[in-house]
Structure formats: structure tokens, C-alpha cells
Amino acid sequence: MNSTATTRVGASYRELNEILERAARSGAVPVTDAQALGLQQRWTAALSARLDAAIEFAGNQPLTDAVAHAWHELATEQPTLRGLLDAAEDSPVLTEARRAEHRMLALAAGLAGLDDPAHVAAGRGLRYRNLIRSGVADLAAAS
Image (cartoon, rainbow, N blue to C red; front, side, top):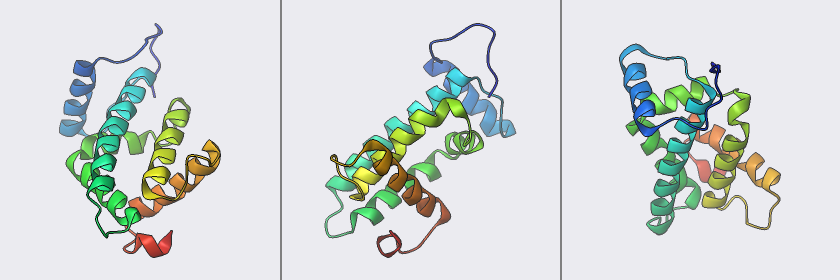
């Protein structure tokens, strides 16, 4: 991540769209910390909506499978966004936002409850997200 000389509160919607367009054309592009956070917030908001729908319409499908499908579907529809975030995987500026995303995944999949400490839920969510990304076929059995 590149830091700007001036401290910025956040990146604008238009700015994030421009980054995504440039990255789609030419691959990875350098982003500031504020832009990385904005991209992560965009992903998390879209994922949250997908998870709500996945839970609501899961029917008899295990929640782990419904949540994994929702994650993969979003990643397929937003490959540039997912690619930029994957490239920033180890960015310290995204640490807390990633923990929140991992906790959200664990809660949605039923791998953690609201009474679980946040760090425990986040740890379960991280392991689960890694399974999702690796393409493990039977997530219900693997988790």
C-alpha cells in the first residue's frame, strides 16, 4: 500500500471505481491505505448482502455450503475487487476490517455464535474463508 503525504479520511466512490477500472485493464495497481480500506468496505458490504440472502434461502442446504457459494459467487462477479484485496492480504491497515469479515463469515455459516469472543469467531472465520478460497468441495464435512 502506498501512503499519501496528506492524511485522508477515506476514498470516494468515484475514486474506487476508477481504481477498479484501471486494475481491470492493466492488472494490479498501487492503492493508498484509504483506498484499500474503501475497497475492503465495498467487498464487506456486498458480501454482507449476499450472506443475508444465502441464509434466508438456504433451505435444507448446510449454511456452510450456502455461505461458501455466496462468497464464490461474489468473487466471480467481482474478480478485480477480489484480486486487489488478495494482493493486499498482508496489509496492516486491513487487519481489523479482515477480522470483522472473518467473524461475519463464521457467524453466517454457524461456525461461531454471538457469545463467542470476537477473536475466536474471527479465527474460525479465517480458517473457513481459507477453505472456501481453496475450493474444498465438501465444506460441511471439512469445517
